[in-house]
Image 1 (cartoon, rainbow, N blue to C red):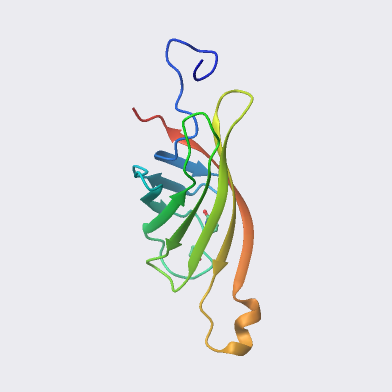
Image 2: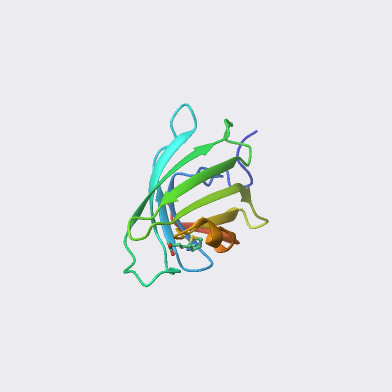
Length: 137
Ligand code: BTN
């Protein structure tokens, strides 16, 4: 009925809560998803578009209402503490063929520019793939 092939210890499947790492080497920790689907967490990016020293930054997100079986869509915003930029991520959690959770995301990074004529170059776009860093019970 539930949870895949390993009946002894069914893996956490597509719960956002926990520690994640992405293809750039960035790490994030997501706290409990509340009854409304909202969550907070922290993000440590491995890279920056600025000359500033990287610091841990807060994230605020929301997950689509779901039961344990599904592969939920979600979004979160990272308000970078060490720059004037904001990144929004949207994505979906999947369970791959090996039973591992993977977060497939796209992001928009909005940088601060000094005037409206520079607006055209203020937004970067990309993708990140996150896998779970540490199992949490
Ligand atoms: C900045 O450079 O102004 C803040 C840091 C931005 C890091 C970006 S967000 C999208 C991409 N994915 C990551 O894990 N880090 C970069």
